[in-house]
Image (cartoon, rainbow, N blue to C red):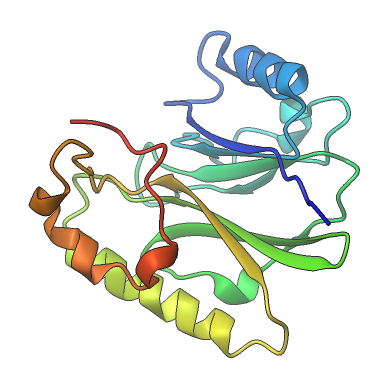
Length: 185
């Protein structure tokens, strides 16, 4: 049996600026994404989720940054999915947002993350430690999940010369990681 999940991640650099939300909405609808993750939403308490509704999609699931301007992550999910936000996987120091859904017989945990490049409290080394904590939590759950991780880790990967990627050895998931969509610096 083949299961397809059409997913994508985009960096909005302020989802409410100019026509950014309209662009995202059109992109999501035209491509029929099941899951669309957004980083750097720049959302806060003053922005109602009601004005960020895409027809045919569940209400936005979002994690806003409260301490300072910028950041934030969110999910748009097709209304054909029954989606549950996983607050038990939240970490205070890192902008991780997790959702759970089921396709056919498969339980899927999908996370979106944003790690600011100038966040001194979450260095790249600490980021991978936090990531490992989340994966350890997931391993202790009673179900087995397929894990899909999206986002902007600001951990740039040199595709042309992988031996230069010092953090690659720190990745907590071994051979199952692919960098197909990685930025080339």
